[in-house]
Image (cartoon, rainbow, N blue to C red; front, side, top):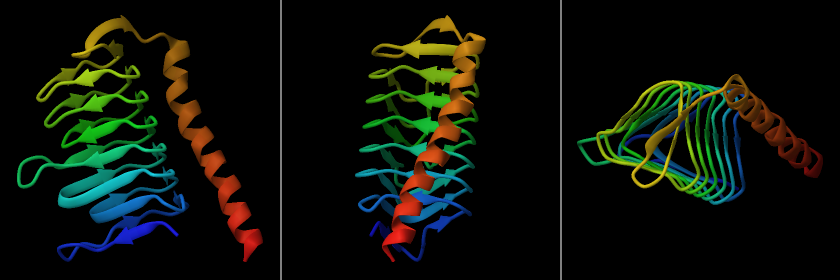
Length: 176
């Protein structure tokens, strides 16, 4: 069973058709849109500030979404993929973004729509990433414009994770 925990009077809210893996953890002031998934060992911890997640977002295995007390909530748009073991903290991620595996996005950073943050990149506090580019490195720097092929990755990945979560829901239904 996933851990869904009320804290400070806030109970997480999930939209229609969401999937939470058995050991996913969603805590506090979290509002998640429809068709989202939170995968194994992922933590979405809205204990000290708010977390808002749009539609068709996937928070992959081991990722952590958190915020900063009284300073920085976390807002994630639609069609966003947060890669395995990524850390998204007190920032804004706009629509159609992929945060690569092991990447870190720090407080008050803004990742504009249609951006790809490469695996292992570190987006520093207060950084603003311009729409339409791939960012990589430590600290993350603009490395190249997004091609149409790379832009297609955003919706393809979001749709794939809706599909993947349906497999797990089917298994859970057949076990009952």
